[in-house]
Image (cartoon, rainbow over all chains, first blue to last red; front, top):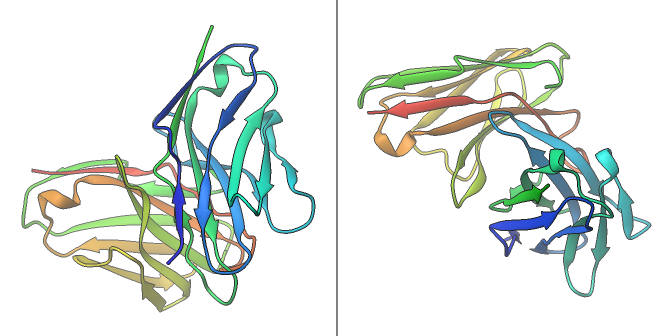
Length: 114
Length: 114
């Protein structure tokens, strides 16, 4: 069975500092990996995904994520945090082959402090 | 929200009452999904559809049924609501079912079962 772990319920970072939101996964074979963001009272919005190729993936709003196969990780990063980045972030994984459901992590609340 | 609407946006009901939630999309995507979001659980798949009248169960389908009589509408029914079904429900669509295809989410329905 596939799974996703987001070890931190909340991450606090000062505005202007780099941020990292951690994600590790478990899946058979090569994964498809996703990051979504959720603002209060809104649905999830797609940020970025890893399918294959370059391990560093760039996405919306200046976010990027690094795929590390040996560590089975897909951490979300941003060089300089904004207060407006404060939101709930979800990592998700899908395995290969036919229809494979997406498994979401439990989410990490990012708080950017002015 | 990628042309996805959900109705109602908020509902309070009593235990044992039937409830139907509606998801409507304007872009004729084939694949539609219903998730529930609960603290500590992330998003969990209830049911999904891969075409008109084609549906299948997700990981938490007990107590829920779905119908899809038109491409644009995907209905989720709680036959007899229970307090454990108090949750936020999200509808999502994707261009294709598998692979590296991200999902697009509606704004959610907050359901409270008293």
